Amino acid sequence: MRNPTALDALARWLVLSLAGVGLFALIPGTSYAAPGFASTRWFFALHPVQVIALGMIALAWVLFVVHVALLRGPWLRDPVGLGLGALALVSVGGCIAALTLGVGESIVATAVVSVALHVAFCLRVDRLARGEVTPAVRRRAPQGSRA
Image 1 (spheres, rainbow, N blue to C red):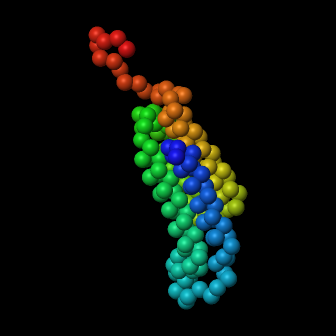
Image 2 (cartoon, helix red, strand yellow):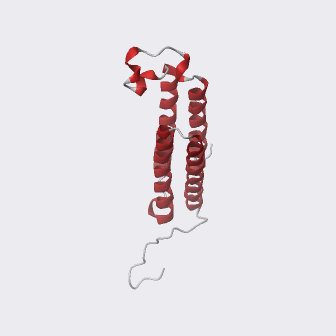
Image 3 (cartoon, rainbow, N blue to C red):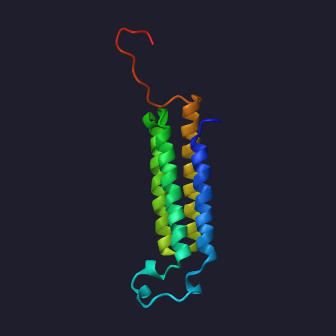
């Protein structure tokens, strides 16, 4: 069995997220009568399948973060890798904001940007793990030694 890579985490994240989005899209919120207090709290207006779908999407992202964090390796010392990871994290917040605002074009645009940033981050992590790219920051050799 081969060692898991960041691209494995990315594939798992995409599959679980798309499954959650598919479930969320299949069951419209207006298909079932919502309880009387639903107008004051949007969460209670959701169908139970939609709540499960939101949980799947959140779990997919948590699994992605845990998987990449367990890889450790040289990407933790690489400013480019850390920067891409931070941008990928911020892009998830952008997706949540776009979903909250509900504008169709912004939802698609932020999703595309988020996936692109996650792909770039995973490619960087995997290339660093294989040694194809040297980290931008290297440890300095002690004075007087040959390195």
